[in-house]
Image (cartoon, rainbow, N blue to C red; front, side, top):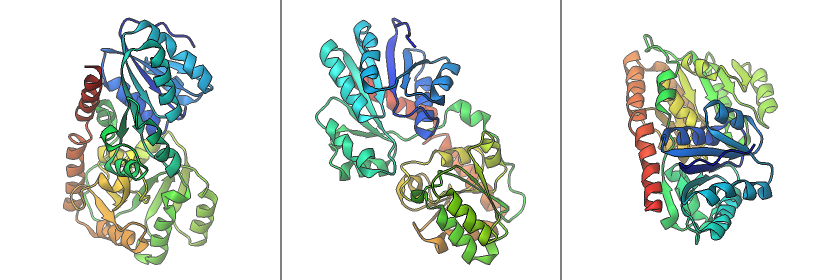
Length: 358
Protein backbone atom coordinates (compact mmCIF):
# COMPACT_ATOMS: atom_id res chain seq x y z
CA UNK A 1 0.00 0.00 0.00
CA UNK A 2 1.55 3.31 -1.09
CA UNK A 3 1.18 6.23 1.34
CA UNK A 4 1.45 9.92 0.64
CA UNK A 5 4.54 11.48 2.19
CA UNK A 6 3.49 14.53 4.24
CA UNK A 7 5.48 17.60 5.30
CA UNK A 8 5.50 16.45 8.94
CA UNK A 9 8.57 14.72 10.38
CA UNK A 10 8.24 11.00 9.61
CA UNK A 11 8.42 8.42 12.38
CA UNK A 12 9.01 5.05 10.77
CA UNK A 13 8.47 2.02 13.03
CA UNK A 14 9.64 -1.23 11.44
CA UNK A 15 8.51 -4.54 12.94
CA UNK A 16 9.87 -8.06 12.50
CA UNK A 17 6.44 -9.59 13.18
CA UNK A 18 2.89 -8.78 12.12
CA UNK A 19 1.34 -10.22 15.29
CA UNK A 20 -0.19 -8.31 18.18
CA UNK A 21 1.97 -9.54 21.05
CA UNK A 22 3.77 -7.29 23.52
CA UNK A 23 6.35 -5.92 21.07
CA UNK A 24 3.76 -4.91 18.50
CA UNK A 25 1.36 -3.50 21.08
CA UNK A 26 4.14 -1.37 22.55
CA UNK A 27 5.05 -0.13 19.07
CA UNK A 28 1.50 1.10 18.50
CA UNK A 29 1.29 2.61 21.99
CA UNK A 30 4.62 4.41 21.61
CA UNK A 31 3.96 6.09 18.28
CA UNK A 32 0.45 7.05 19.36
CA UNK A 33 1.77 8.61 22.55
CA UNK A 34 4.56 10.57 20.88
CA UNK A 35 1.99 13.05 19.71
CA UNK A 36 0.79 15.00 16.68
CA UNK A 37 4.18 16.45 15.71
CA UNK A 38 5.10 13.21 13.90
CA UNK A 39 3.87 11.40 10.80
CA UNK A 40 3.86 7.79 12.11
CA UNK A 41 4.08 4.84 9.72
CA UNK A 42 4.23 1.15 10.67
CA UNK A 43 6.18 -1.21 8.37
CA UNK A 44 5.29 -4.81 9.11
CA UNK A 45 4.92 -8.29 7.61
CA UNK A 46 1.31 -9.41 7.04
CA UNK A 47 -0.66 -9.82 10.23
CA UNK A 48 -3.21 -8.20 12.55
CA UNK A 49 -0.92 -5.30 13.53
CA UNK A 50 -1.46 -3.74 10.08
CA UNK A 51 -5.25 -3.67 10.51
CA UNK A 52 -4.94 -2.39 14.08
CA UNK A 53 -2.58 0.41 13.01
CA UNK A 54 -5.01 1.53 10.33
CA UNK A 55 -7.92 1.33 12.78
CA UNK A 56 -5.99 3.73 15.00
CA UNK A 57 -5.49 6.12 12.09
CA UNK A 58 -1.79 5.35 11.66
CA UNK A 59 -0.02 4.81 8.37
CA UNK A 60 0.78 1.16 7.70
CA UNK A 61 2.81 -0.50 4.95
CA UNK A 62 2.78 -4.28 4.54
CA UNK A 63 6.19 -5.68 3.59
CA UNK A 64 7.05 -9.22 2.53
CA UNK A 65 10.85 -9.27 2.29
CA UNK A 66 13.96 -7.16 2.90
CA UNK A 67 14.24 -5.92 -0.68
CA UNK A 68 10.67 -4.63 -0.49
CA UNK A 69 11.44 -2.91 2.80
CA UNK A 70 14.56 -1.26 1.38
CA UNK A 71 12.55 0.32 -1.43
CA UNK A 72 9.46 1.07 0.69
CA UNK A 73 11.24 3.41 3.14
CA UNK A 74 13.08 5.48 0.53
CA UNK A 75 10.27 7.97 -0.28
CA UNK A 76 10.37 9.25 3.31
CA UNK A 77 14.12 9.74 3.15
CA UNK A 78 13.82 11.42 -0.24
CA UNK A 79 11.21 13.97 0.90
CA UNK A 80 12.32 14.65 4.49
CA UNK A 81 15.33 16.43 5.93
CA UNK A 82 15.06 14.58 9.21
CA UNK A 83 13.38 11.40 10.43
CA UNK A 84 12.92 9.20 13.46
CA UNK A 85 13.25 5.46 12.89
CA UNK A 86 12.40 2.69 15.34
CA UNK A 87 13.33 -0.87 14.43
CA UNK A 88 12.96 -4.31 16.03
CA UNK A 89 15.08 -6.26 13.52
CA UNK A 90 18.84 -5.97 12.98
CA UNK A 91 18.58 -6.32 9.20
CA UNK A 92 16.08 -3.46 9.09
CA UNK A 93 18.43 -1.23 11.06
CA UNK A 94 21.30 -2.10 8.72
CA UNK A 95 19.12 -1.29 5.70
CA UNK A 96 18.07 2.03 7.26
CA UNK A 97 21.75 2.92 7.66
CA UNK A 98 22.39 1.90 4.06
CA UNK A 99 19.53 4.07 2.76
CA UNK A 100 20.81 7.02 4.73
CA UNK A 101 24.22 6.65 3.11
CA UNK A 102 22.40 7.61 -0.07
CA UNK A 103 20.32 10.49 1.35
CA UNK A 104 22.46 11.81 4.24
CA UNK A 105 19.49 12.83 6.36
CA UNK A 106 19.54 13.67 10.06
CA UNK A 107 17.89 10.73 11.76
CA UNK A 108 17.17 9.52 15.26
CA UNK A 109 17.63 5.77 14.91
CA UNK A 110 16.38 3.64 17.82
CA UNK A 111 16.68 -0.13 17.77
CA UNK A 112 14.15 -1.66 20.19
CA UNK A 113 15.37 -4.70 22.16
CA UNK A 114 12.49 -6.62 23.71
CA UNK A 115 14.49 -9.82 24.15
CA UNK A 116 13.28 -13.37 23.64
CA UNK A 117 14.02 -17.05 24.08
CA UNK A 118 16.85 -17.26 21.53
CA UNK A 119 19.86 -15.56 23.15
CA UNK A 120 21.96 -15.30 19.98
CA UNK A 121 19.10 -13.88 17.93
CA UNK A 122 17.65 -11.64 20.64
CA UNK A 123 20.91 -10.23 22.00
CA UNK A 124 24.02 -11.55 20.24
CA UNK A 125 23.28 -10.11 16.81
CA UNK A 126 22.86 -6.61 18.25
CA UNK A 127 26.63 -6.12 18.47
CA UNK A 128 26.64 -5.81 14.66
CA UNK A 129 25.47 -2.24 15.29
CA UNK A 130 28.25 -1.30 17.74
CA UNK A 131 29.84 1.13 15.29
CA UNK A 132 26.67 2.48 13.71
CA UNK A 133 24.75 5.64 14.73
CA UNK A 134 22.04 3.58 16.41
CA UNK A 135 20.74 3.75 20.00
CA UNK A 136 19.68 0.38 21.38
CA UNK A 137 16.66 0.76 23.67
CA UNK A 138 16.48 -2.06 26.24
CA UNK A 139 13.06 -2.49 27.84
CA UNK A 140 14.55 -3.54 31.20
CA UNK A 141 17.82 -3.74 33.10
CA UNK A 142 17.68 -7.50 32.53
CA UNK A 143 17.72 -6.91 28.76
CA UNK A 144 20.57 -4.41 29.14
CA UNK A 145 22.59 -6.99 31.08
CA UNK A 146 22.01 -9.65 28.39
CA UNK A 147 23.18 -7.20 25.72
CA UNK A 148 26.36 -6.50 27.67
CA UNK A 149 27.03 -10.23 28.07
CA UNK A 150 26.87 -10.54 24.29
CA UNK A 151 29.35 -7.76 23.64
CA UNK A 152 27.12 -4.79 22.84
CA UNK A 153 28.76 -1.40 23.37
CA UNK A 154 27.35 -0.05 26.69
CA UNK A 155 27.52 3.52 25.34
CA UNK A 156 24.91 2.55 22.74
CA UNK A 157 22.33 1.27 25.25
CA UNK A 158 19.50 3.20 26.89
CA UNK A 159 16.95 1.56 29.19
CA UNK A 160 13.36 2.71 28.66
CA UNK A 161 10.83 0.45 30.32
CA UNK A 162 7.49 -0.42 28.80
CA UNK A 163 4.33 1.34 29.90
CA UNK A 164 0.57 1.28 29.57
CA UNK A 165 -1.09 4.14 27.76
CA UNK A 166 -3.30 6.45 29.81
CA UNK A 167 -6.26 5.28 27.74
CA UNK A 168 -5.42 1.62 28.42
CA UNK A 169 -5.24 2.23 32.17
CA UNK A 170 -8.46 4.25 32.23
CA UNK A 171 -10.44 1.65 30.27
CA UNK A 172 -9.14 -1.46 32.05
CA UNK A 173 -11.75 -3.60 33.83
CA UNK A 174 -10.93 -3.58 37.54
CA UNK A 175 -11.27 -6.12 40.28
CA UNK A 176 -13.33 -4.89 43.25
CA UNK A 177 -11.41 -4.45 46.48
CA UNK A 178 -10.84 -7.60 48.51
CA UNK A 179 -13.49 -8.04 51.17
CA UNK A 180 -12.42 -11.45 52.48
CA UNK A 181 -9.33 -13.59 52.76
CA UNK A 182 -8.60 -16.52 50.45
CA UNK A 183 -7.61 -16.92 46.80
CA UNK A 184 -10.15 -18.61 44.58
CA UNK A 185 -9.28 -17.66 40.98
CA UNK A 186 -5.77 -17.39 39.54
CA UNK A 187 -4.75 -16.39 36.03
CA UNK A 188 -1.67 -17.00 33.89
CA UNK A 189 -1.17 -14.99 30.67
CA UNK A 190 1.74 -16.56 28.82
CA UNK A 191 2.90 -18.63 25.91
CA UNK A 192 2.86 -22.29 26.90
CA UNK A 193 6.47 -22.97 25.92
CA UNK A 194 9.17 -24.65 28.05
CA UNK A 195 11.01 -21.39 28.81
CA UNK A 196 7.84 -19.97 30.42
CA UNK A 197 8.04 -22.63 33.19
CA UNK A 198 4.30 -23.20 33.63
CA UNK A 199 5.33 -26.63 34.96
CA UNK A 200 6.42 -24.90 38.18
CA UNK A 201 2.83 -23.91 38.90
CA UNK A 202 1.66 -27.49 38.41
CA UNK A 203 4.47 -28.70 40.68
CA UNK A 204 3.31 -26.26 43.37
CA UNK A 205 -0.34 -27.28 43.12
CA UNK A 206 0.41 -31.01 43.03
CA UNK A 207 2.66 -30.99 46.10
CA UNK A 208 0.63 -28.63 48.28
CA UNK A 209 -2.88 -30.01 48.88
CA UNK A 210 -3.95 -26.78 50.62
CA UNK A 211 -3.74 -25.07 47.20
CA UNK A 212 -5.64 -27.65 45.16
CA UNK A 213 -8.84 -25.65 45.59
CA UNK A 214 -7.37 -22.86 43.46
CA UNK A 215 -8.99 -22.50 40.05
CA UNK A 216 -6.47 -21.45 37.37
CA UNK A 217 -7.15 -20.08 33.90
CA UNK A 218 -4.25 -20.25 31.42
CA UNK A 219 -4.43 -17.78 28.51
CA UNK A 220 -2.00 -18.59 25.72
CA UNK A 221 -0.84 -21.39 23.48
CA UNK A 222 2.46 -23.12 22.81
CA UNK A 223 4.39 -26.33 22.41
CA UNK A 224 3.80 -27.46 26.02
CA UNK A 225 0.02 -27.14 25.87
CA UNK A 226 -0.93 -30.80 25.38
CA UNK A 227 1.62 -32.04 27.90
CA UNK A 228 0.37 -29.58 30.51
CA UNK A 229 -3.26 -30.45 29.79
CA UNK A 230 -2.63 -34.18 30.28
CA UNK A 231 -0.72 -33.57 33.47
CA UNK A 232 -3.39 -31.28 34.94
CA UNK A 233 -6.08 -33.81 34.11
CA UNK A 234 -4.10 -36.68 35.63
CA UNK A 235 -3.49 -34.70 38.83
CA UNK A 236 -7.12 -33.53 38.94
CA UNK A 237 -6.11 -29.89 39.06
CA UNK A 238 -8.70 -27.21 38.38
CA UNK A 239 -6.92 -25.67 35.39
CA UNK A 240 -8.69 -24.37 32.29
CA UNK A 241 -6.72 -23.87 29.08
CA UNK A 242 -8.27 -20.85 27.38
CA UNK A 243 -5.88 -20.39 24.43
CA UNK A 244 -5.97 -16.96 22.81
CA UNK A 245 -9.03 -14.94 23.77
CA UNK A 246 -10.41 -11.44 23.40
CA UNK A 247 -11.90 -11.84 26.89
CA UNK A 248 -8.58 -11.87 28.72
CA UNK A 249 -8.96 -8.33 30.15
CA UNK A 250 -12.21 -9.21 31.90
CA UNK A 251 -10.83 -12.57 32.99
CA UNK A 252 -7.92 -10.76 34.60
CA UNK A 253 -10.29 -8.47 36.51
CA UNK A 254 -12.24 -11.56 37.66
CA UNK A 255 -9.08 -13.10 39.17
CA UNK A 256 -7.53 -12.93 42.63
CA UNK A 257 -3.89 -13.24 41.53
CA UNK A 258 -1.74 -13.19 38.38
CA UNK A 259 1.02 -15.81 38.42
CA UNK A 260 4.11 -15.31 36.26
CA UNK A 261 6.63 -18.18 36.26
CA UNK A 262 9.31 -17.29 33.69
CA UNK A 263 12.67 -16.11 35.07
CA UNK A 264 14.00 -15.27 31.58
CA UNK A 265 11.21 -12.83 30.72
CA UNK A 266 12.62 -9.62 29.23
CA UNK A 267 9.76 -7.57 30.69
CA UNK A 268 6.23 -8.91 31.24
CA UNK A 269 3.53 -6.56 30.00
CA UNK A 270 0.80 -8.68 31.59
CA UNK A 271 2.18 -7.67 35.00
CA UNK A 272 1.41 -4.01 34.26
CA UNK A 273 -2.04 -5.03 33.04
CA UNK A 274 -2.63 -6.81 36.34
CA UNK A 275 -1.63 -3.64 38.18
CA UNK A 276 -4.21 -1.72 36.14
CA UNK A 277 -6.83 -4.36 37.00
CA UNK A 278 -6.15 -4.17 40.78
CA UNK A 279 -4.97 -7.80 40.81
CA UNK A 280 -1.98 -8.88 42.97
CA UNK A 281 0.96 -10.52 41.19
CA UNK A 282 3.49 -13.23 41.99
CA UNK A 283 6.69 -13.28 39.91
CA UNK A 284 10.14 -14.95 40.08
CA UNK A 285 13.02 -13.06 41.65
CA UNK A 286 15.06 -13.05 38.43
CA UNK A 287 14.58 -11.71 34.92
CA UNK A 288 12.77 -8.66 33.67
CA UNK A 289 9.52 -9.66 35.34
CA UNK A 290 11.17 -9.81 38.76
CA UNK A 291 12.55 -6.30 38.32
CA UNK A 292 9.03 -4.88 37.96
CA UNK A 293 8.01 -5.77 41.50
CA UNK A 294 9.03 -4.32 44.85
CA UNK A 295 8.55 -7.47 46.96
CA UNK A 296 6.02 -7.14 49.72
CA UNK A 297 4.99 -3.69 48.53
CA UNK A 298 3.69 -4.01 44.95
CA UNK A 299 3.58 -7.80 44.70
CA UNK A 300 5.38 -10.96 45.78
CA UNK A 301 8.48 -12.70 44.42
CA UNK A 302 9.39 -16.38 44.69
CA UNK A 303 12.79 -18.03 44.28
CA UNK A 304 13.41 -18.61 40.59
CA UNK A 305 12.75 -22.20 39.49
CA UNK A 306 11.58 -23.26 42.97
CA UNK A 307 8.05 -24.68 43.08
CA UNK A 308 8.06 -24.84 46.88
CA UNK A 309 8.84 -21.11 47.03
CA UNK A 310 6.03 -20.39 44.57
CA UNK A 311 3.65 -22.45 46.72
CA UNK A 312 4.76 -20.50 49.80
CA UNK A 313 3.96 -17.18 48.12
CA UNK A 314 0.54 -18.50 47.00
CA UNK A 315 -0.13 -19.68 50.56
CA UNK A 316 0.94 -16.27 51.89
CA UNK A 317 -1.60 -14.50 49.68
CA UNK A 318 -4.25 -17.14 50.38
CA UNK A 319 -3.93 -16.44 54.11
CA UNK A 320 -3.46 -12.66 53.82
CA UNK A 321 -6.00 -10.21 55.17
CA UNK A 322 -8.10 -8.13 52.77
CA UNK A 323 -6.29 -5.05 54.10
CA UNK A 324 -2.91 -6.47 53.04
CA UNK A 325 -4.16 -7.51 49.59
CA UNK A 326 -5.75 -4.12 48.97
CA UNK A 327 -2.56 -2.37 50.06
CA UNK A 328 -0.56 -4.42 47.53
CA UNK A 329 -2.86 -3.43 44.68
CA UNK A 330 -3.00 0.22 45.76
CA UNK A 331 0.80 0.42 45.83
CA UNK A 332 1.02 -1.25 42.44
CA UNK A 333 -1.46 1.23 40.97
CA UNK A 334 0.66 4.08 42.29
CA UNK A 335 3.78 2.69 40.60
CA UNK A 336 1.82 2.19 37.39
CA UNK A 337 1.08 5.91 37.43
CA UNK A 338 4.74 6.90 37.86
CA UNK A 339 7.44 4.42 36.85
CA UNK A 340 5.29 2.76 34.17
CA UNK A 341 3.29 5.78 33.07
CA UNK A 342 2.90 6.91 29.49
CA UNK A 343 3.95 10.45 30.39
CA UNK A 344 7.26 9.47 32.01
CA UNK A 345 8.39 6.88 29.51
CA UNK A 346 7.36 8.82 26.41
CA UNK A 347 9.36 11.74 27.81
CA UNK A 348 12.36 9.37 27.76
CA UNK A 349 11.78 8.62 24.10
CA UNK A 350 11.47 12.31 23.28
CA UNK A 351 14.78 13.03 24.98
CA UNK A 352 16.58 10.30 23.02
CA UNK A 353 15.08 11.51 19.73
CA UNK A 354 15.82 15.17 20.43
CA UNK A 355 19.43 14.40 21.36
CA UNK A 356 19.95 12.53 18.09
CA UNK A 357 18.30 15.23 15.97
CA UNK A 358 20.01 18.19 17.70
